[in-house]
Image (cartoon, rainbow, N blue to C red):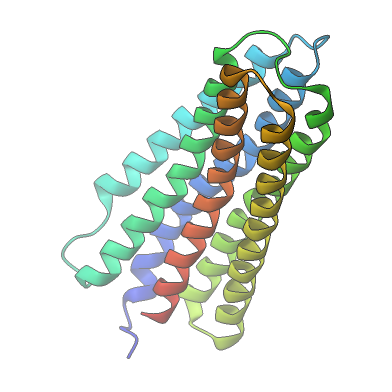
Length: 222
């Protein structure tokens, strides 16, 4: 049975979660631009895009702390509160993975990634961009659902969650392909280590998007 006051509590909370999700969407563009620039020896804007990304993450961090600091303790049942807080933390891990990926990419200078892997890396980045976009959509639809609790709106959220999961699986396939090519073609152990780790870090972005979707699925079932 739905508590009659629940939508009144969830509305402002999801408003702030939406702001946080929108920051994630903004980060997607800067991440893609920075990554493409790092693969291009003629591009000099990598550090600039990375700084913009870090600034967006800091802004998202302020929103996250606002949610965690002001979330009502005395009204919602513990399971509801715990799930929402877990969702916010998982959504925040998406940003952490983005910044961590570019940090790792920046540690080693020069064009050390073999040319024949450039297109595959760009394909992997494209694959994780799709879940980025879907996170903001999912939160938007979840806000509508928790406002009215209609089955149609719940199904809209579930469909987006399924879409995110599909994108994550696609990213996994590209990730495995690059790893296999890297092991087959890179003989320098340091380069191989750096490339494999970079692939895995990019993959974690899609992983956290999927994890956020799964937490949202449990929230809908509550």
